[in-house]
Image (cartoon, rainbow, N blue to C red; front, side, top):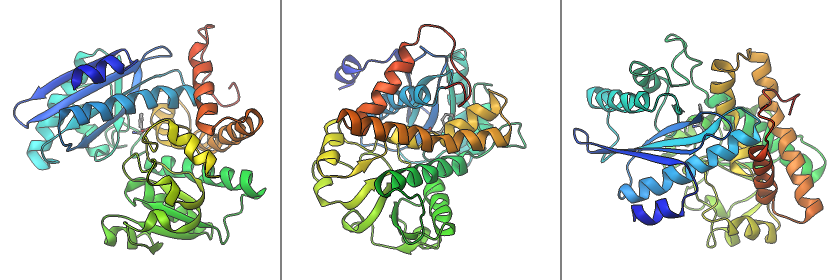
Length: 355
Ligand code: PHE
């Protein structure tokens, strides 16, 4: 299984270590350093097996290359998965993260990590005890802190751009948005939408967590079939596939999750169903802008806000291009990423105005 996955992957390298103490597989996937050191979060999760974990990490790393290229940042793409038998806490978690921090340090800066599913600023602080190649440590430890508000804000701007493309107005008043997954990003997105007077349906495997957002909780298993303007997947990836797409009753899909499409053909399935799709790695770039912008590019909070708001303009451009060229929005995003990756002037822009 590992052999097939690596044979089919177009990335640079995958570094794999088994941590015998925790039973964790540490999978660091460096997809591309074409535009700079590979950056991307660390996902802490249990999987059916190490091959499934590797598959996730390889795909997520490729998504980071595209995400950072589309954002116009001088960074390559990578991702790490810590595939654990059970998500650890306390001392066991600290030891795992320290050992993982040493692994990152051994890569000499070719991979710089940040938070992802199940990891946060406290974890980045622990990793930061072993390597400087880490974003989003706590502010107290000298980092830029939790990026999830900026991921949520980018998705919020992206939803408005999506509605504007559909209806000519980005006003959220009375629009129905289904936020699926109310973790760190989904809950903040729900709050932003509620403040903008949208009708917010929320679903989560943890019903209490969904309720706490202030949105209208809907059962997780029926969520996909609810009528809404926008479906915002903010839980784990790949909710869009051959089976689910015909059941959707939304007009657009625009959410924070990485890897929302089970396979590339699902972009065409959405288009054929008349559903506008905001490519996941375009709309969810706000977290990366936070970590990389604040810590590496010296942005102040105002510039970060402007860059995050710029996600709306990028999406609008992709929607127009997709209409004009009769391609999927995903294809339009792939072309933009490919164009950025093909630049040969060596001069990578660092702000939206230069892009
Ligand atoms: N894990 C997040 C993402 O998928 C955010 C992130 C990336 C944070 C890189 C910092 C650095 O984009």
